[in-house]
Length: 154
Image (cartoon, rainbow, N blue to C red; front, top):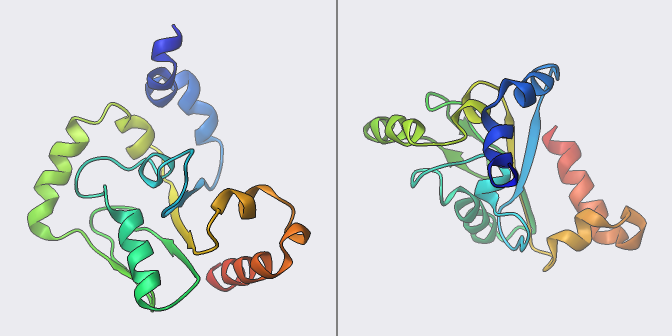
């Protein structure tokens, strides 16, 4: 059934099994200005605790007067990632809310049974899709900055 396709792909072992074959799974979400896919959807986020992660990353980038921020998110509620750009942590008193959120999440198997490296990407070049969907030579200066930051981060 077409209406249940996304739900089936996120919960049915028929679809999850091929994903398990990948050694590493990396997903990227634009922190802001993505008209096609929200940061929350791109990063398989859910609930009020995670709802503002993209905006939080964007705001920190702007506060630091930077054009680019690339941030790996914690892989679990017990992880904290610290670097010069951002600190993300789920406080102890919010872990109960996170557990309740997980229990109500329709895509919980996709979210929790597979380990995902989640990367928030923020760049202040007005149109994220122009940079991501065109060859680097089409916008050499912007692409150079973006690729240099990716290289530094990884």
